[in-house]
Length: 394
Image (cartoon, rainbow, N blue to C red; front, side):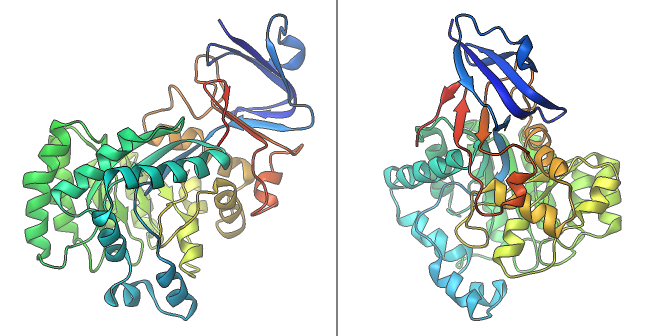
């Protein structure tokens, strides 16, 4: 039995508690004891001296688009010239440009690029991610993306989500494509057990509330849990739709109002907020995080890692945006990126906090106060990342 003792952390953030001079005893990849360092027996253990440093759970990123080919540098430059998300999409950019590149890539090439992305996440201290399909938009290509998620050789835990209803193919009407999603794609995804969740982009120019309801209702019948890209560019009452359907999460929510917030609270739907995409799109319309927290919602923070609207895997940058732009406290932000996020993925029994019996997924930051992680924005990377008690080298 391999035993590891982490001792003398300036702060060990569980994050339910902050333990000064904190320590952990880890046995066979799981946490056995969390306490002050004077209560950690180091005899026979491999010792990790975290003196002067902060130890906290590995981040849980509950909204990413991990698997895709290429990049969207042309879109990036167009945005710098002042073009909007909608204008870029109409000009042939946006989601569709990534779809074409992803369709053309082999599963080997997709897995290779996704492995690189996974390494980026681990370097940033993220040890669990939710990952969506959605850059295929044919049955074969959507299945290819989901299968690639299972092929990636990485210590990063990947929770798969089917997002076939991400955009509408050029040669189909919205209703024709929804027919394909519900009659062909979803049954195949469920049969092969390729995803735990189903997501849909409910937005003007993409999928209407009725089309989103149809997709998610069939997904629910097939045993998938529900998520939704909603109220990002306009308030289409997407939050209320997610509440009505009993979704696990409602994501984005930049345009959600007080009625949407009340509906989420009533139905116990977790908001997943993505300030990185607001920032990258040059917008100032951040979600109403403070009102959501004050309403009693367990807010989640995620990167929305994707090649177009949020090309970042840095959770520390997201924490900074949450504090500076959405007025969340540093501890609220850390909880949103760890235990709250784990709950939204049904992983709170194994990851998201430093507690006895959970996996020893944790990161060490070279600072003495956890608030520094958001404070030194764009600069604070972990000095070490551990998955199941093993030091990860990427």
